[in-house]
Length: 279
Image (tube, rainbow, N blue to C red; front, side, top):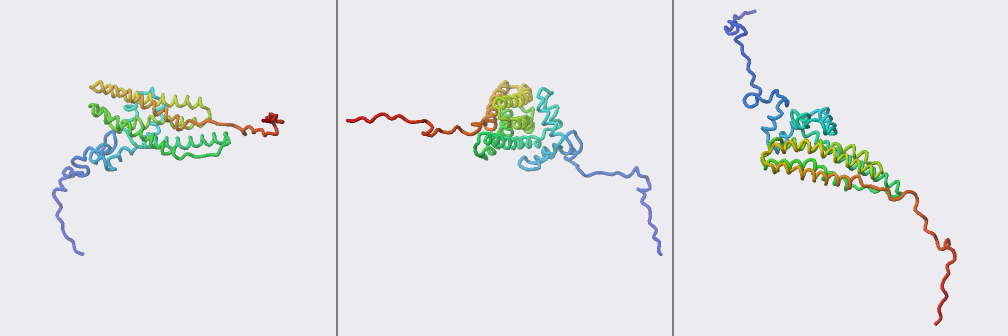
């Protein structure tokens, strides 16, 4: 067996204080992607990706179920502190608003169809399912919950109001429609006055929630014109709530029981005919 003498490196013998370790992960502009209140790379990933790429929206769907549920049921308490600062921190998300609106579309169609089935049964009429309600709910709910806040954000940006982002605007409107889910369930009851009352409750809670979170942002604008936007916000909300009632909560029992029999001529007794006239 042969032995080879190897000279020790003087740099190692000098002690571990001469050893330095460097990390080249996340160097340069990626140094901000670790840590922070909004999670690892929450803002930087969307900043480096173009808005037409899926990577741009990926951080806004990175939210757990408990957070989404909390953000949903707290909208039923509109008198709580500012929703943007109290519940949409450290950052708003798109996952909750998307599934809230999608669930609302499903509830509108399913519960409305179920109510129509009950009414048809009580009215002794054949059950006829209206599948056009699904496309109507799809267009109306997504237009109001996604399209309307996006257009409003563009208009406010035109007037120089940049206090909130489009994601926050969509989050406010998306989560704000959560109250219509239990309303659509209870409106299965075949009582017209109850359905009108529940529609008023849904209109009041969701409307107050939206206005309470949007108007403070409008007040921060330098131009007073931007504060007038609260008027079309309220008017459009009135129109949408009325459409919800007419399209999804309007069904009435036409008749109950068998129809009245039509009497035959024999049941009416003898019929006196006038005598014939001779010319």
